[in-house]
Image (tube, rainbow, N blue to C red):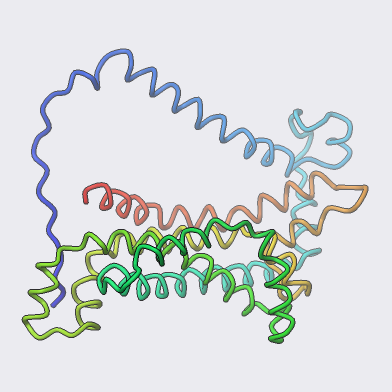
Length: 291
């Protein structure tokens, strides 16, 4: 049976006068204004996705569409073969999210619970590696992928982003597991539980909210990646959605309504994924705050 930590029941909070008054409403207005400002680019994209090229060139991007124009959506869907690109993005992002979480948990278990020698230096090294810009990594990755015969394959991108995301996941989980109650681990060891049993039966149930948050973030971060997939995936059958969207733009000419329509279609799967796992994300962040 899994052993889980029971957080203390929150008592009734005493009335706090600092949370009342005009300051609370000012903060609420500022947050609302920031939320509206963040929605402005999405509103422009939605407005121009259903506008004809003639209407766009005549009236500009700020005008209301003269007609409900859907040719841009169909053009983007057929021109880039969107179902193939969608499947590639789902396969790569899903694989990276699962593999990076597994690698992060195993390495963080060794660093946080195992307390190996030089633990702080190793965690610092993971953090430093995660801060390196992708522009500095792209040529070595390109060279090694060529040498290994993995260039222009989805496996190459999955391996690269699993390592990159696992570096951040290891840093975060090792910090969490470093504060794990030692008495709970010692009690499980006295009951005869080995290291693997302690990991799956004691540690995993208690860090599941944090792992859920990492899983959601790893999927979204990998979905939005552009530079490494652009260099590594040159075939239409292996490219992802962001790379396909960039292929619409020429050197001197750009079809703005089709580009906006493509951006709208490309954004919908990520929004749908976020809405499905939004409650999981909120529970994970709340559990982390409680600890």
